[in-house]
Length: 169
Image 1 (cartoon, rainbow, N blue to C red):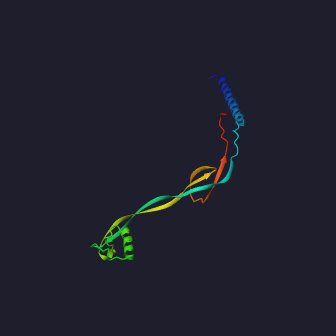
Image 2 (image 1 turned 45 degrees about the horizontal axis):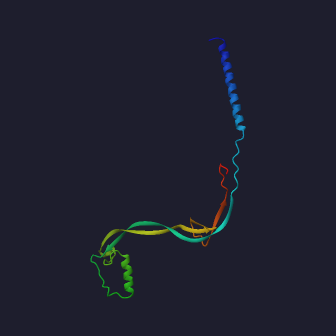
Image 3 (image 1 turned 90 degrees about the vertical axis):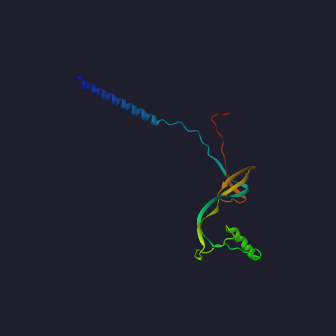
């Protein structure tokens, strides 16, 4: 190595330091420049008006639940003659017949010595989830699903904003 090697290394270090300072200054100047302004946005014109409700129909969700129930039957079928029943007994018998799977088999308590088995019983429940509401506002019909029945009048939010496109006609 020569004697000039330390001097040239120092010169290179100064050049690198100067280049770094120039780059930092350029970055600082670029940050000070203001960005292009965003297009002007107009405030929204909003008001509340009333619409006439034409129809509000409830909407239900159907849920099914199956449970196991112990059903016990007498060892011998029991039959009643229809002629023996009169008046109220016939009505009660008809209701019981509609609710039990086999009207000729009498259900007994498990301690009475009948045959018992587990039977699946399916039940259906209807749960209200909202209302489909048809309404008219300024001569135009609309339909919305709302959580509650609105009654005869429905408050509506009216917003009018001009449509601005890139092309001007």
